[in-house]
Length: 386
Figure 1 (tube, rainbow, N blue to C red):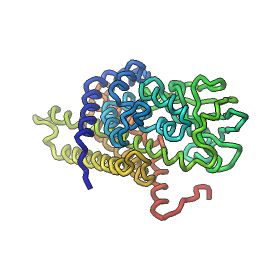
Figure 2: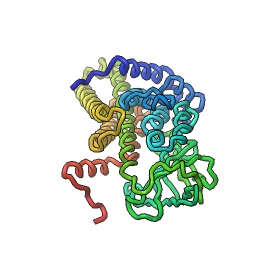
Figure 3: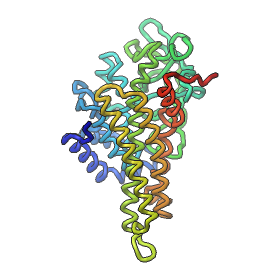
Figure 4: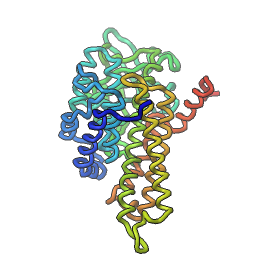
């Protein structure tokens, strides 16, 4: 068992670290102040550097590397902020992976290269007003009508809604109840019948648009079918790539907080000496470092085992659950060590705290991950409706 990154992986990580650390802090501040997402000019920069296509197939314009390589780059962006890292997350770990793997060849050939070039953002639309954790309760319908698929329903908590040009929409086919009726369809933003609600005002995740999506007799060609009825488990298999991306974004927030506070405690003096010389501070630093490194190892194990394929569901759930929890602990401890400076917006730590809480809600909550992990341990699913 080798825990050493290859020379190419180390070079990729260092390139991402330098680019993100040197060029993106000001952009991160602007995004947090305005709430505006990464603009087209910056997306073009990301694309030129190859960060939007790390694990995309070469025939679609990507680098064709394993998922782990994408997560290495993603962590470095997330160290700066969630806002600047989100396009990398969506392209490398999000719905673009579903379109590339499951989409009609013509659809994938259109959408995926545009995403790699920074010319198309793709969002995933799963939750609904009455279907979040209980996703198999979703009500958005899909029916086949000649050469078209017709969609009706309302989707909620879609990250990217109104801003992204394409959507992977989870829906129920032919009125089939439960998981057996669920599939997914690709929908372009400008399709007639698609509309969006007002942008949500969230605690964190500024620069990550979120809104309802209304689908009123939306017609898309049959070639936009990604997965038909009965393909829910297949969709969730690919969603494990996103779960590891979610864990990596959590890790990046925590790693950035640890890095920032480690510098701070060596520069800040009280009672005539640097506060790092106080044993209580040393204990907190060590505890944070242990948690960050443990999360990183869990993510890297799951990603390395997956290669270019699908992560193991239990490994992905464990990595996500642990990273979601430790990012909150690390960022809030770092804020406490920085005192008033940690609480002030000017210094950025409070932004890390705000962002740290979002990842344990998105992509399957911390508690539902624990239920899934327990189900794997005992070898059966638990009926939440009993």
